[in-house]
Image 1 (cartoon, rainbow, N blue to C red):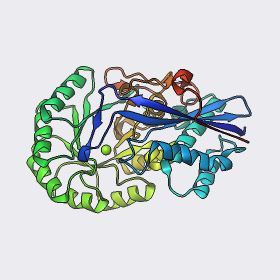
Image 2: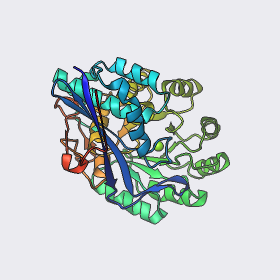
Image 3: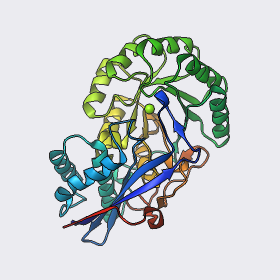
Image 4: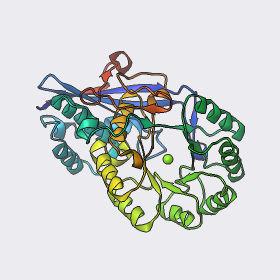
Length: 368
Ligand code: MG
């Protein structure tokens, strides 16, 4: 099988809630998503998606994804997309860094590998553990009262895991955490994710002020060293996200005892191939994972479901159903949340069919 052509689509994904706000006042109202179609000489096409959380969450942005695909197109055309290690090696040789660009290509290669083998990506990754994957809901940063109401509404929809977007004014963040934590029963999970927004001194003050709450602290500060300094001064369980973006960072964090769980995002680490490598290492090291991506629609949600469902339940901290956050459906057949859970499809590849009406005309096209 050979890649004959690459089509790139741009899709706007407006947010159902209108606006998603996190630390330092950053927000997005319409997500800029990129979908790729790898067209092969076999008649099969593979699809992938990458959707940065705006241009200021990770070093990634929508136009960057599309330009990066153009940059890599000449090394991809003519290659066998099911030879995934070779494709990844070629991409890493041709372009340093830019993991989110490689992620969308790698995802489409997994879709094609599954379609060729007539197996789901989940089956190719080792098989589904359990019936379904428990999801968390991210709660956009607003007033403490509004966030508490929002948590109550999503609890009623069946979610049992929540991530509060904090990383704002310390006194208000303490209120946000305390008010929400007071709602919870045992068996539910609450994470306060500061998304790098706290200074070290404030992170320590806030952690001390909420020490009686049953919560996790996620990525309080900008750098790894700052997070480690906070970690050493709190008893609260600790999650790293933005600071752990590759295998080397994971090994270092494990060696330093810097975290109790990690947030594994597919495009942050360069695609499903590398995410699976980190996932398998976390399983061996007994590190629980939130398995997700920066953002996305139906195609990203399907990819998350395959990676998460093929992860042992004991090490699955949570996952995300981004397709339930946005108003546009970019594919059919993606997982649909039921009572706070989702399942990976048994259909070949990612198990999705692109919604061509939503994708529209390609914004660029590359051919042999
Ligand atoms: Mg996070």
